[in-house]
Image (cartoon, rainbow, N blue to C red; front, top):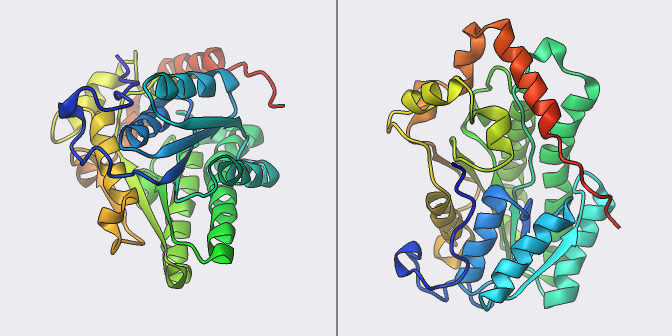
Length: 304
């Protein structure tokens, strides 16, 4: 079952391994914050005192994240934004400044992925992943960086990548290409923007159950058991574990860390990425995955 929530504000003490006001005074922007890992990170940052703005393409998901945070006493805001569009990414960053008067933290979490035989990929399928992951990360990061540099303010950027960003992975080629680009962007700007007090790091989670992407990649297939067994620690990661690491990386506690990628995958990448095992599956498996992907395509209402 997907674990989609971390308690948004202090109430269950053992879920918060940091001082309860670690992020007090900070404003955090989380793209893809309407569901999955993005929603959980937004909850965790709010729990630790940050004011949070979440952005994605689906208003109903963003509203749900916003309500959960504000009903628990936190401060939040949301804006529909398709980060594949440079203007929309710019507007999202400007919305954070307009609403809260500042921006301190950016989490580039908007993503997409699906299993596919690369020879069967359409141009649109390829572009849908690369434009969201790589272009979207660049547009949001550039917009935030421009404001920080102009204002002579420090900032922290955390981009969610994956362990196959440096190894590649069969059957998720668009994602592998895009995540590798995000990792290169992170390391490049960590050097270029260090003189401005801007830190950039990346977090590479292994399999962590979420709604949406998890169903398209692993859940409910013959592949799920094999994927779990392939991980040296013998289990999938949790949202709480990812949120703990993300919190450390965006907070001032890691002020001397930049240009780094932190892997949280139970040792998976050391024995080869899970997706490589799909080289031997049957044609029927691929047909089933393609049908499942078509059925799970979200029907979003258009952004205003």
